[in-house]
Image (tube, rainbow, N blue to C red; front, side, top):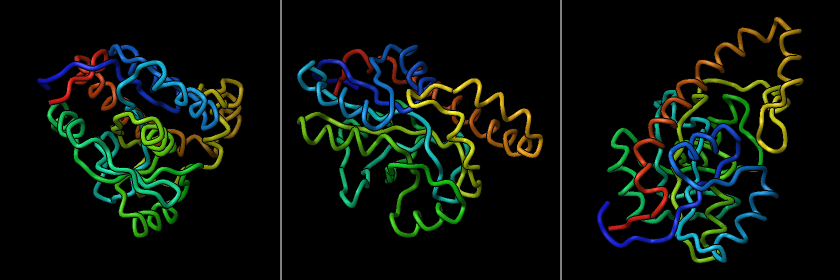
Amino acid sequence: MNGARHPAVLAVTGLAFEARIAARAGAVTCCGDRASLERTLSKAAEAGYAGLLSFGLAGGLDPALRPGDLIAAQSVLCDGAIYATDLEWLEGLLRSCPQARRGRTVSLASPAFTHEAKQRLYRESGACVVDMESGIAAAAAVRFGLRFASLRAVADPASRSLPSWVLDCVAPNGRIAGRRALALFARPSQWIALYGLAGDARAGTGSLAGAAAALQPHFGLLELS
């Protein structure tokens, strides 16, 4: 992207490993649950950030999407409000990550666990993917007059239901809760589901890492044409 150079982008993530992927590519990151993200983002404009990039994994809603597919959001639907992403930034993301497709993201306060819930969201929202952070970042960007974009990699596809115990393995700070995760090995009935989820997550994480590498020149200074 050629053009004026602006202060750094803040990458907004929900999970610690997503933040590590962005940080390895040179991004400044913030990570956490809804309350901690809102506290951090309330200081973003004061700190001089020019833009907020929602970055991480997402659940697939469009049945055509597969694990690892990238979605650059045109808009984010959250709590009944529709937030448009920055058009110039969106086009820049698509140039840097030509394998990504544009679409809508719906952002919820809790995950969409089941195939049926994903189907309903897809019909009602028209969104390609669902996440938990893009709405928080979008609302903060509007509030503080910052540019906003969202780039998400599909982890679980629309056809896959997430077991409720998945959340039990994630600590409030976004890190994997080791003791809780180890407890799963005492429940062999969950191993097959865990194996499938792990394969989806590997595809999504690999795609996310590739996207971060492609975006590396743009994390330190945001360049907009």
